[in-house]
Image (tube, rainbow, N blue to C red; front, top):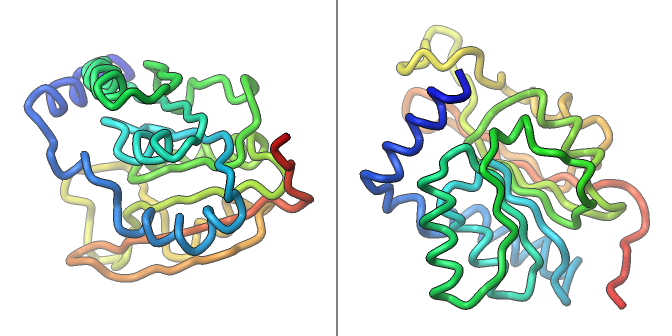
Length: 198
């Protein structure tokens, strides 16, 4: 299953996914509203299933120490080239996000965009530093009478995300319909005092 998933994304990234090279508008808005005020001198971040690194590159250019995990070797290869071209440093890992060793470090910011895997949420909460932020955007099942067109298992239900991160304080949470599905945009904060950079 994992190899099939990696091969699928390798093919997609090899063919080109230009829509996944620019930062998501929700990410940019969230950065300005919540991340930058909390971490004016940047911090450490993790981009889960980060693909071509649209968010990790943007953050690394602003002095964030970023790690990125993605199942696609093609995406990681392209990202390595782009990081070199932009002269930014990234720690890159070819792995399924669920297999990543979250004990490697603690993070001030963790991003998860359009990769739903319920097993990730407790790991995200435990990997955040006190005061750290989790920024998440993904599709949700909006109408019970509409079945996912790609047969993608069991997507998140409406308002389910809050129950998946009981260790976080909700900073921002919105859900809205988009065509035949829904989208959830979520920002959560780990309780506790921020770790201040030296």
